[in-house]
Length: 269
Image (cartoon, rainbow, N blue to C red):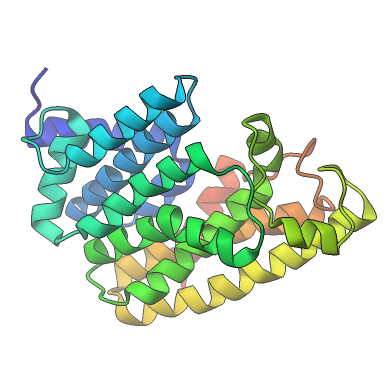
């Protein structure tokens, strides 16, 4: 099927609403052209994640990920490539950031443990950090350093929230030296686990506070979008803390009503 630009954007926005609830709530405050472009970036990142996390043999995953990289140079045909191609032309989205997303997917095939936070941070830069850089171009900011830092903070919260899901995929993103330092011998709730996760939470908050200085370079609606993303993730972090960091049996996700509340509070500020 061939897609017009309008059809392609409609499809990536449908995907965003279905698969990326935080993104969908955040971008609703943007003007149409920026909202569609952010959805195109998300759809590309989602395709990469789906390949890396899927059930295909590793060699086939690598082939498909490299094909997604190559699609950045081909004549677009599927909805994501048509929408992303148009968004790149309109907003000058960094190719390096998009390629970094592919590199992150490939890294997930090769590495399942991280010795230190410095090692983990390098991975985070390739995934959510790269999304932050790509989106900064859409927002109209050249403050890529803080966009990267904010993306890293959101990834750190994802890592905390998704410990059980990642373990089922054979991955442990929490730094191995910190697991040892806090005496955590199993991924399960314990006094040691709570201390470790409180440490992770503080790190995420420090990164978020620094990353949110990005708002200084944004127009009002872009700033509202970014602060909404941050508010939604901060709400998840607060929920984890309130649950005693039991990310195994208690839900750390916000309800639709709670998410709308974050958006509404931003609009009222």
